[in-house]
Length: 208
Image 1 (spheres, helix red, strand yellow):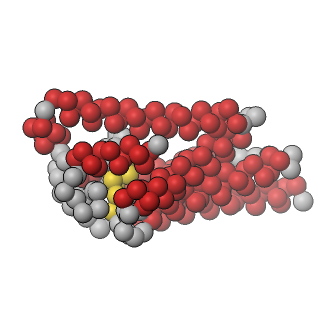
Image 2 (image 1 turned 90 degrees about the vertical axis):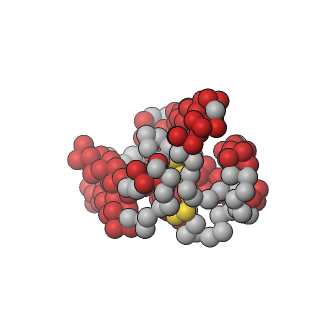
């Protein structure tokens, strides 16, 4: 569904792009120049992105027997959704050309941009983490975490999002992406991942 919508939008706004999309993106001023309906369509797209997140969260809520399982199912659903989004775009448009191809990842609250490999890395991490949580739930040994663990994992996620949004002002003004902030991305991913692994280690140690 997501890939189909993006195919339509690219055909509408980037008809001359070789691969269906390319930077720079259309700015708000350019959309206003095209007509009021195009500005309205931008807000419809923002609402659609939010609705997609609500839909994925609903999957987790319905599938989980508790909050831990609900979050794990949401993480898995989100990761699978994002991976197959790119697989379908490759089938529809033969895009992206490679894992380092730049993409406009998200629009809320500001544009997120990065090489295609970056959301795929996050998707794999989410799927693996969700499966690990469900494994411990299935074994009847749910992972126990403290507020500090959650604070560190959320902080790591916020740092990753900051890396995606680092160049947002340039992107919004119609510029080409500057080099991706790999150190910031890596730091955020490492903080969340290491904290999660320490939670697993602590749980295994306490039960042994």
